[in-house]
Image (cartoon, rainbow, N blue to C red):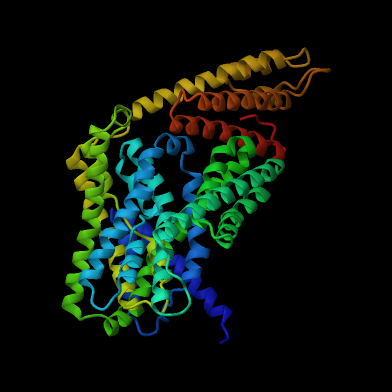
Length: 537
């Protein structure tokens, strides 16, 4: 079949235009953009001349998922994830396993004509939360920083556990269909999980280290950003080929490169990368929700021919949504009890009942569920109906976000201490500036006019004076001297901030805020120098 390139381009442009327009209008009126995009897509899918959307699982798994995960990972604090690793592991491994079993058994009991393996496959499909949706909601609700870290860490890492469980269930389905696949034993599932984790983490670290070394040699932001754009695929594809977790490889590479960015990248490269990945993340994450809506017509049509009937479908859908919600709530109550009443080490790291309930409310599903459900083989009993149920779960959990702000207010969780964060920003910035001034004293020579040093010390007006009073004979041009010495100071300031971060004396948010301020000034200096602009400001 020949593909019309012009028509393809037109549809891509229309897709982006609708995504941007709907998201912008939704934000303006205070609605949930993902929900509106799903509804718009669903409505459009019923228009006769709109082409039927056929979901290709490899396109989502290999095309959309890696960049979405990488965009979230490079913006996630590695220090915070490491500090909350116990809670994150309880959710990304323990909760996923509990959800697979609970939802799988429920689906096996209430969905007609599906096998136990197919039911567990469905449980694995709907188990992982969506990193993009969780991050967006967490940022909008001003949740406590610790809670945000746990939710983001969970949603980044739980995909690996879910996909291992899905692979095990698919092997059982294929074996039952007599197509040559041997069912996995419990020990085989554990071994597959260990291999997936070890290979995924290993590939992610290797890719992060190698690309970090290469990017440290690149000074042009265009080259650095270009390499950044292919990084998630360089991590995902080899990990998948080696039977590891491509998801975990992308997350590890993103966390590593995000943490090492102040050392391996120039300030301009960091700013360019941040803006580019924010744009990519915005387009992809919102396009996925529109894509979900556009796919609804074909999924619904297949489900009606494969399902048990309208009313029974409604009852099954509601029952599964309730079980998914209750499974998360029960697990959170269990883990909160362990933290509250367990050994003293756990009690010191525990969270409150209100925090546990808040975590249980933030179980939003998204792109991973969408991709995973289409990985089910044709031999899966009730495959089309299970695909429809997965879409119901994605949309149903998205609808939770409408009521989530109300429940969060009822829980009366303490908001982030913005005044404390600003105090830390000022303290760290002052500390960095002191190091910069100390470095300035060691760099000043007789060839530098005193007015340059005064400008560096008091941040006074400089450009007009430099233009009106050129440097005396034998002295370095004031603007050039200012730029050179200010760069030296900036380097010292950045070293001081990184040293403070390594010692754990400030919160990561304060560290990133100060590094961003330093990056902006360094970028401005470099841009002014390349333009021929002699202004240091």
